[in-house]
Length: 321
Image (tube, rainbow, N blue to C red; front, side):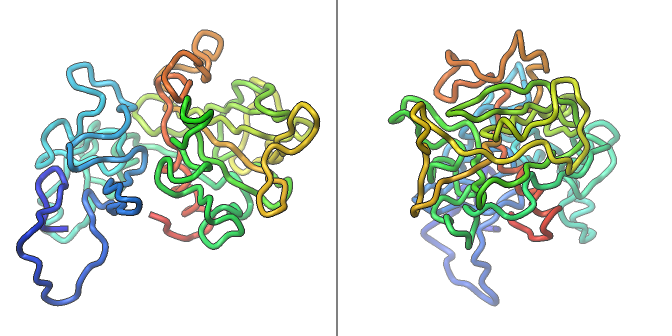
């Protein structure tokens, strides 16, 4: 969108005449402005950006010791772009003038690329969606009012929604399924941990051969799985698309379902994502840290929505950005 300040805040109060075709989408860094619920935030791949204060709404997954973790575009949005929310990259304006859109400069090689992921790492495995079918709480699904793709905190399935009456925040995206369904490994990787999780369910933690920040392989926690369905163990190698378990049903101490919607017992995959920057030794640095803020997770926690959208796109051939 053209009428905005360098940090993305829109100009208002003048020049409102539209000549030609009106573009209803308000874009910055190639990402759409989320105006629902009055949020006015840009939904980048990893986190959300607030143009009113020129800052991110959550901490940077990449440590910059000389800057605030909420700093945006290294305080220079003219030179740097950050369409992912993971790290800033120089935009190649010469290539832009030649008509090559979305060109970023690889920090390692200096070569231009159309993919911000390639600007982080030259080699990336593709991601596939962790379910064979679209979740029932996606757009158009049975439980679309709990759309897992909605803005942070918009409903109980989203990252950042309140738990325990606001005492803590949801650290995942919940994907609802029609009964118990296979859960698939999103790409190749190594199983770090398999153990009991929440309300009678289990979790599998895998460090994948995939990066969202340079130098660290992402760690995904596949939570709320049916324990009896899990046939892998810590140390096992997994392939992309391999069945690692089935979605589970939350059960309380009396054996009753914890979550029922529209008369149906809800099965789900609870997906958490960590950049891996804090390492893969889960004994010294466990993913759950009750003393660490409202999310009660370790410091490299990120919203998995960017990973899920990319994987959905690869698997179901639908652009959701």
